[in-house]
Length: 362
Image (cartoon, rainbow, N blue to C red; front, side, top):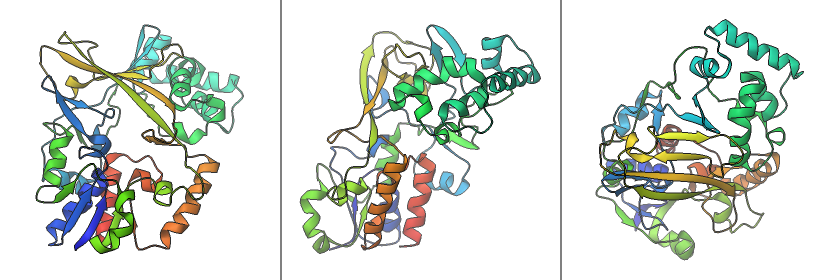
């Protein structure tokens, strides 16, 4: 009998398992997938570490989290500086003075601010009530129309004026020439890929893959003293109150016989005609020099049962339903954690921190 049965070999589960192991406890980790690492999983293709479930760029201002992960892997100096492609026009992201200069020809922050303020006033926005109004308030109508509107509609499958303003409030807007998207104190990609990090976190720990918790749920009490569950919260309760909604992502990945396809790791396609939201060129996450390259096109769509859940749809209906499930969860002895169990889109450093806190407060 183990001290802990951990459901899910993703970031929350792997960090929690490492803590248990290092404290002298016994732990079994299961995952219904055929690999560890959850959505952070990377696989080698043509010598390139491919982010199988989309780009994962680690960034944090939390020194404790950074030092914890650096026990197991070294990070490179990758800095995320995406490019936006609007019908062949290329713009710097996040929105900064390079973006404003390309859009309007301005060269000073005051000129850029004046245009944004003028367009906000023309739109008659005082207190933004939806994503469209929030975006126009932040960057003006021109940038909203070219660089926000189409991309966001593809990402969420809804018009921007039907989406909450909170989605875009975290959007970086800088009146400097700084195109470092995250601007975090610590950031980078694990040298050798994320799977190397998970191999180290789970070293010496028993892991059973292709194992669905639903198949062993009834006997979990005889397997371990405590269960840590990182899967979808509604699935744990057999959807008895209904389904929580997500957006899902489909990836088209291909090997191309060229050393350089697009010149950048991430290019967003912000028009509404291009069916995919962005193209990832994986080699540039690790400054690759391979003769070939691997790209992934990302297509966002409405989630249905059986699809991989990516982004929680945190509207009133779903948040209310989540709270009902959360009350059921609080009546159990199970430790719930991670983005699916918490029904929140977490940055990776937040997931690590929450796993460390969950272990300390167990």
